[in-house]
Image 1 (tube, rainbow, N blue to C red):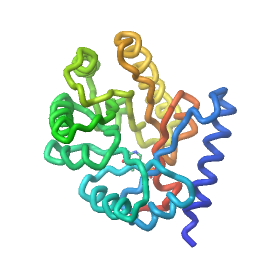
Image 2: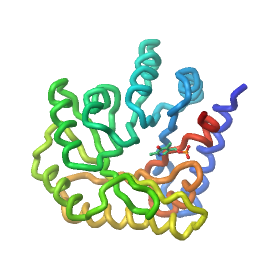
Image 3: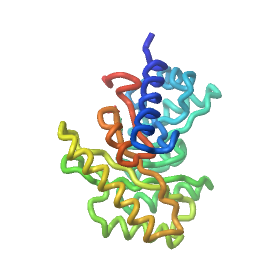
Length: 233
Ligand SMILES: *Cc1c(COP(=O)(O)O)cnc(C)c1O
């Protein structure tokens, strides 16, 4: 037995407990089960245990895995969470309902183009660099403002921006981790105020090692891999 069902149950009950002790409404945090490097069978096991939302960071791997799973009539939802090359956008748009890792304007333009082609509405999050050691994401608030303004102006009709994503620095220093999450939360509040016609409600932050702090700081989506599926090879 692999223990995926047990791990899921444990994580979900932890999430509910942390919500409660942080004074957050019940079910205000969703779980993305990060299945990268794990086979289709593991995803199916998680689906059978009740999980329906998954995260993958490599498009080719995700496409072959989720095409296989869906061809069996198994329904599940996929978020792309890893850095995305322009030539992979077409596949990403096809297989995912949300791209969490939008970190530059060119990507938005390509997502719009590919989504328009297949007449699909796709959600996106803006990935923001909030910690010293993580490299991905927007680093300049000006750049971020520019893309959000273009979304607000209606330049990307097939794209629905839903919020922000970040990875905290990989450090034992919990204060630095917390600081990173607070930065994202404050950024969300600020941009939501500036662009009231957008619904920037989501904060995707928190992984296996830091989701408790993330939920305390307002996370609405935690992305957890190792604590569900075990170590990646
Ligand atoms: C792999 C990955 C995760 C999950 O990490 P774990 O530590 O295994 O929970 C979350 N977010 C992103 C962007 C990832 O690449």
